[in-house]
Image 1 (tube, rainbow, N blue to C red):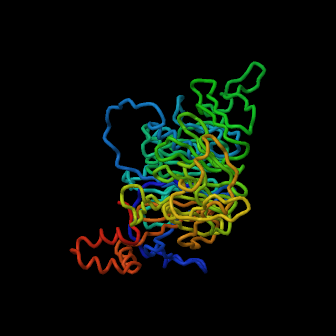
Image 2: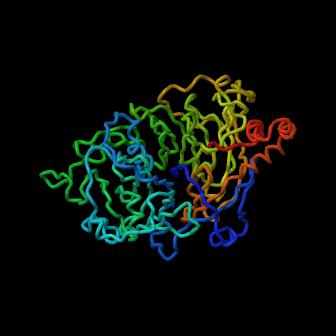
Image 3: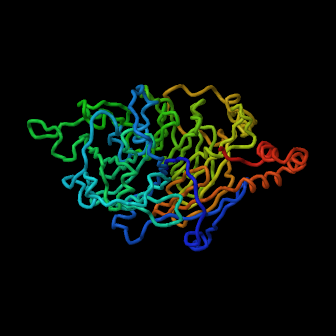
Length: 535
């Protein structure tokens, strides 16, 4: 459940290298894959002296935020309507949906405005934002750009410089009466408020990450406050009140808590602007497809649901084998969805067939995070899009990181099982052997495991001593986080190591490459064997 962006990592120093930070017994500082060795580059964490008594009540989530150089001012231009232009909406929605199924899903950035948070806010104290730049302390060392890790622990949000050799955060923001639960970064935010923070009270705040880094205090600066009750104002008593003194609800009452419904706000200047009631019970994770056209949700009831965001219609979905689903993630091309949860399994859903097309077994406890590695590409990919291998990862409460390879043209797919007989298997596309795609809008029960191809992990490695809560991939590294707020950055194998491993795994490469000019060896080996990274 992490946001990803392209990030680079500088070389470690002696003070932050793995050698200077001894690992717990049984945990290695590297793990091997077919393409080479991933090495622990360095770690990021919080200061133990800053922990609040509420630590342990929330789970650490991590967001990767890349600040670009500030662009020169330009004349605003009109944007087309629709989901394709609503990156702020998608980013906010995808990270700020928590709590029970009756809580409103907030589309932050819609109609209505926000007010600067002041000391009169009901979440006040050290959290109050300074609305006047002259009253805040400025960090003169901040150059206005860089790649940062934003993570929550207890009652605080911490910000670390991904490229820095320092282990401790460069900034901490503390909340006096609530705990941060989730956050999101939108690099394309047009109003400069690119960082969103959701609290367990239901409140949502938007701030400028650049402005937070420029200020050295432990408070939000220039924040906009979106109240959990749908009011833009920062005071509870500002909500509409009926003559009898009862609070006037922004949305109509939910008639059937078990059914999916979408309601618009009664007031044109309200935030949230709409409420999506997904299911009965908590929603644990939601994610938009890369193009913003579809929204996937997983929840306490164990169902994955996929919606067409523009039409607000259910497309497909299905149930876990056991218990709740805790996480979900899209492939970059929008063809597949990963889910993980309390059944200790990873499921691969196909949008084309609207059903589970593979499941992976390897974790010994709940799967808490899944993600596709969009920077990894198989050497077997011919560029036509017809033969594509996907690499994805999963982390769990068993403290393990698992990496998986998925190639639908090579996977063993079951044919239909005759009544009373055993399933037969064949290689090839699942569409050639299974029934037609499930009808639109159908929620399916969990399929029989014998009828769905099983995946085995490429590697399984214990990366932390505490249960894991998040996973993300960058072009240079794999980032893992545990629920206690400790983050590890694992660098990918070097290009030379990948080429060497490819040659060892495929002796024909060494023989063939000797017949070609030296400058052609790299491209030859990347096509014949081993794995490569997308540049």
